[in-house]
Length: 310
Image (cartoon, rainbow, N blue to C red; front, side, top):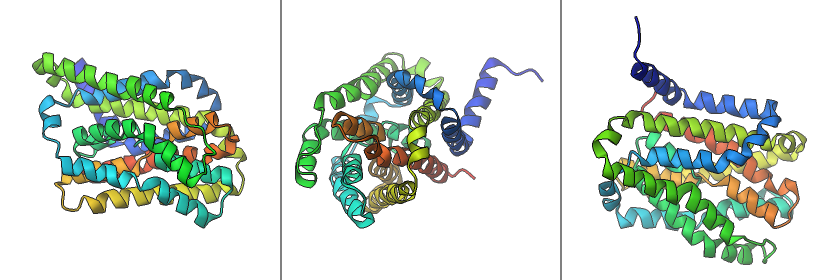
């Protein structure tokens, strides 16, 4: 039986979506075994832009207009608690000051840039998670310095411009372009709608592999502290999911899923970059690195559960 190009692409898209968790785990393994793949880090922003742009092609202006202010405000409010929870976890685990800074910055940054993608794959409210990402991203310009001053006594220098630039080029610009394209050519764009989440999921797989490869040596040499920091990463990720799910208990299911992922997922790449810019030793980025691996794996699992995958 000969398959058409469209049928082949549909089968490949299904293969990516149905086994996303397995692909993510395989990507982590490849990154650890082939650290030379770190050279692909220079392509991170374009990959993220493709990821956000692809998932944004599934969104319409009407979906953004339908966003409820209460749901958005709740996500932002719970998000603001994350750096304080992270600080408490660091104190409980009795980690070093550098690692404490790593946890605090991780809690204070925006939701992970792939959150809208995972929300879409989870059958959640993608427009809500995308809007929360942008709103929180803009707010972090003032929020992170405040958290640093309160919890870290001003020991971390924050490059606000770096945060704004990443948000603009990796999220806002591709999102606006994609929504504009859909608005201009709705019929043509919607014809391929089933493929857009798969393209974004493929970008997720690439990103986690690249990030793991870039930090493979640090992971390998962390020693016993790796377990302690890993435990903290799992706890912070789990708390975020639980908090988002609980505060959204009266929301429609789609909004509740968006809240769960938006609070539980953190932009570990931005957190690591801020710590490096602040002059902390490489070990300070360990919470962000391990959290990235944990959240990408756990979010892929949640997407399968929320979407009813077997």
